[in-house]
Image (cartoon, rainbow, N blue to C red; front, side):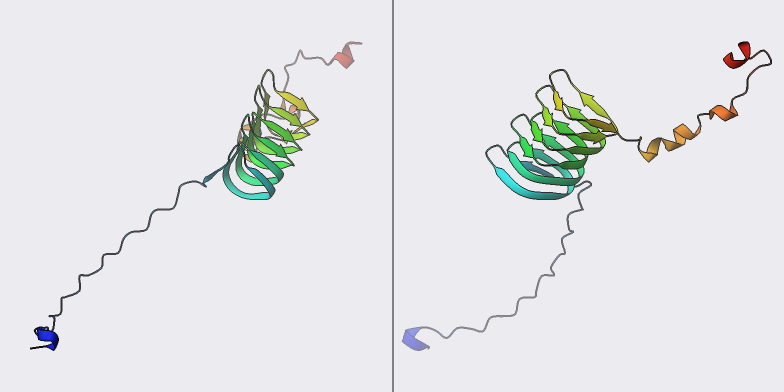
Amino acid sequence: MGFFGMQKAETPEEVPAVPRQETASAPAPARAGSTVIADGITLTGTLKGEGVVQVEGVVVGEFDMTGAVIVSESGLVRGPITADVVRLAGRVEGNVHAREHMRLEPTGSLDGDVTTASLVVEDGGSLNGRCTTLKPTPALEPELAQVRKPDDLQFGPDFELDEEKG
């Protein structure tokens, strides 16, 4: 008999350990993530990264993105934006460099210069600045290489240049 009238505890039998199953880690996402800067939030600084950033609040600073920057109707960006694609329904006070495409929607306003390969300004969109178009992306180069150069063109025997008619 044990202490205070209790029986002596028996030694527990060893329970065989259950082999631990390894769980497979989640696969990496197929594309970069998305970030939303919500209405009522003010962010100050430089945003660098990959993916999609949607601005519904205020950003005072610079964007340097691989991916897209979307400025919603309630969004305001005070600073330059560099991204592959820029969609603007809110307001930007700064220059925009869209490597592939920029779309200025009817509620959008840009006070700054635009450099892009493709620009769409919808009715009502406001662009106060200069626009510079870039050459098409290298993906189009093979198609353009098939176009014949003017030196390669051949004309029929009756062809006369305007200079010779005089």
